[in-house]
Length: 638
Image (cartoon, rainbow, N blue to C red; front, side, top):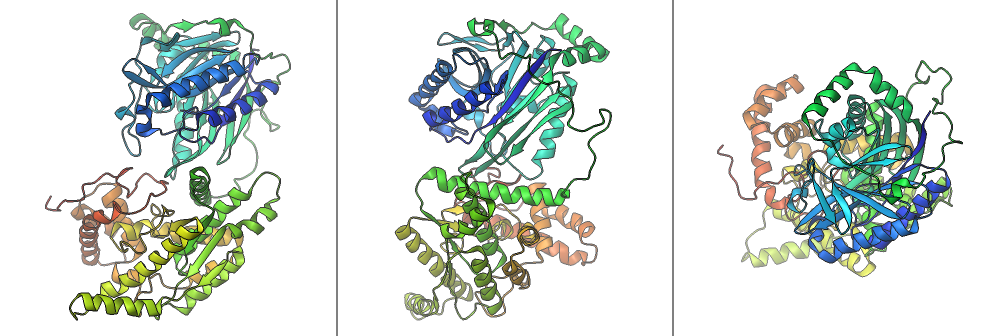
């Protein structure tokens, strides 16, 4: 047996906070070493924070990362653990996104990322250079390039995030060069459904390359990007460790590297592919620095990696506690709460959270997410879960600002939920101000009459103005409450309900909003949620107003959003697809709604660019600087 203990470290770092980031990995690294960890794996850009975006163009920022990594190396000189951590490195006119290998006080080498993503929320090729096969540069006395690393336990290869998402990535050639362990340092943002995709992809890479693969993912939020953390260790495709998500910390497992070698010798296909590669390709160089000759953590006391259940030939008994739908909804809740929590905490600009509460679905979900974020903020590891929940509402202030159009059902639901959460709710009517503003608008029009839409928007803008005034005076993070579906078709008011410092659910479709509320009700039993779900969705800015009556049924609206914006179908193609999804609705009506959606979608882009920063939780964003980058001025003639 050749046993090693591999640890995955999930660190919630902040861009630019280089000293504090290194303190975090240093604290975890010392704990790992004390626990006999052989190989400690941290995450992508853990020293400088991710994504650095154009901050990486400041030379002092890059230099500070190198200095702090050297400090980490010096501080771990007496530790037997080998560490892998992500860092930005400059060489001449190039910048590289690297994985650094550190042992016994020495930075042994930097291995740069080769696959630089420029899709969805990523734009790394804007600032970073790509690594490449046979690349060999001198980064201030430390080799930077395509390398493997030899230690007393075996041969190690390292790579960065996107490199593992391609079957033709660097892992292949490094495994053919003898690497038995591959560490992937990652910063992969959360999006709905990504967990199963990651797991299957990583298991496949590990199996295809007959290698032990350790994958550590960054946890926390940077601006609107949410990273769910966690990670896996797979040995030749076999799961060995599934690290907890949405929390900071480290976890470890033991693997027998002789099992990896045995599997390679048994796999004739892998051997023949390796032979062909060795005949045609240049070998990957191996680094054996001073640190590589120092013994790593002793393995004599490590336990054999037997499964935790009794039968070695069968998986563990028992059914999953949650359905797949429940897992997705729970992940969404945690991702959104983590996004609000970290934005509040890391920015350092706020003392409390504020929500304009109407009693409708969107604002009620935003309040619930704010409450979960407040629970995270209060959880210091010493309080019980009951104590954390009991005081979370004290960090939030909610306001209800009614007019003559506000319904009793939504008002009662808002009051009930706020009381259940322990959130103070202040009622501040805007009826008189509404009348004054309509009169002022009439005067500006030369005694003309404001349109009906203007009268509705006046109410929304008054509420936003008052929230901003309160937030300025109280140091509050004003949370914008609009959802993705209504944002997509412009069913929102510039200067009104589109206002706020952070959009919590701006990338959550309306049908998912309802499902999340139902999940909150199932998990926590808040009766106020039931009151909200019993009312018809609508902004309550006019008598008898309903959102679906003015737009279309929300399931149809969300289907249009998915097909047009997500799948990039044309309006006629959307019209052809909708009858399959809604066979009970007239095809002509569905076609009309498809055309209406496309027209509203295009005309509403000018609103998106004025909306607050939003949390990214899906494969599609209505945020110009993130996933869906569309010109504001365009026509639908195509």
